[in-house]
Image (tube, rainbow, N blue to C red; front, side):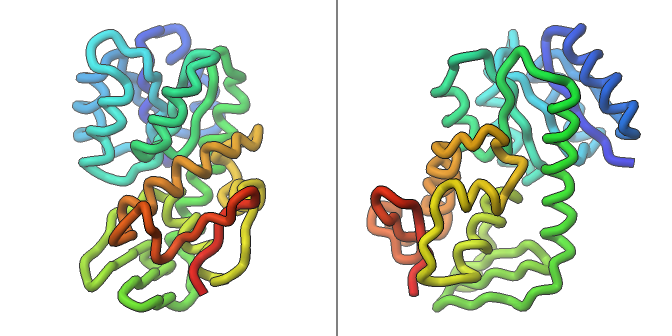
Length: 226
């Protein structure tokens, strides 16, 4: 049974989310502060974190940053309506998806299921290792190395990189990349792709401002170097 850590200082919202997740046969742990979230993450080892950014003690973005230093567990962030900056910063910090409050509990469960399914399908992918110069992409282990050094990517970042590198030279629109990692933004929030590409470049490019691997096709989208 998968474990989901729900972090929200509004206990009623957390309990509603718990009830819907439990009906879908997930185990749920609730935390109402950032400190509790980090402690529960260490002890419960959840498969997914649902994280409200508006926490009373530690800013949710700081919690996201701390979680990413510990591991690559998928994160769905919850933001207040209109906080577009927080969405983008959260994605750039490594969150895999976001939802805007107030949200549908059924949609939250669907998003969580999609993110977890992507994690399972990626880790079980039997495809061969992609080697591009000193960059190695191993789908079977969801492992990326650069010059022999392992690069830590989130599930979404890995899927974007693998999608692009599998067809070098092909131009992908943002909508096509969203579809490739469906579940990340059902409403096709295309700027989310830009945030994840920025993260990827920071991690794999020798010079992110002059990318060697992931190229921008202005007005269209992105492509992997031929």
